[in-house]
Image (cartoon, rainbow over all chains, first blue to last red; front, side, top):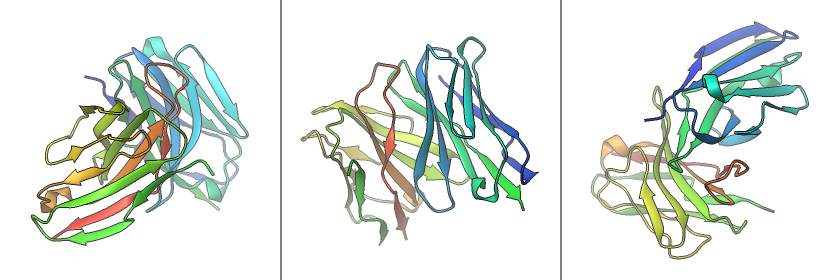
Length: 111
Length: 115
């Protein structure tokens, strides 16, 4: 059964720093991996989708990588800003046509 | 505007009173799914549907029913709600399944409280 883990569960960094969020999954038979952002009490905003054949995707200050063979993905945020404070979730679309989420990393950017 | 809509957004009900949460998408998506989000447990898939009249269980289907009679709609039915179904519910859709480029689009969420 696919399991998705995100470490750390919470992270605080000073504004302006670059940071990396981690996501690992146990079964490499996935179609894709998607990173989301969720603000408190709100819905999910899609950030990046990495297809199973891709190694990375970039959008603005965000860069997501995927190493399917090792079951790992990272989300790199450059030059962090207070507005980046949110919970970041990763989800895999696995070969059983199910979507499995990690529990998220709660990010706090200190002004 | 391409979107996934859910109704109601907030619902307080009592144990045992049947309820339906509606989900609709206007993107002609084939794949639709329901999730619940609970503190410490994250988002868990309840049911998913590959297309009209095709539904399957996710990780936490007990106590829930779904139907997919039309492509755009995927209602979540709680026939006899219990307090342990108090949660934040999300509906999502994607163009399809079984491929690497199918991105999930989420609705705004429905906060359900069962007393």
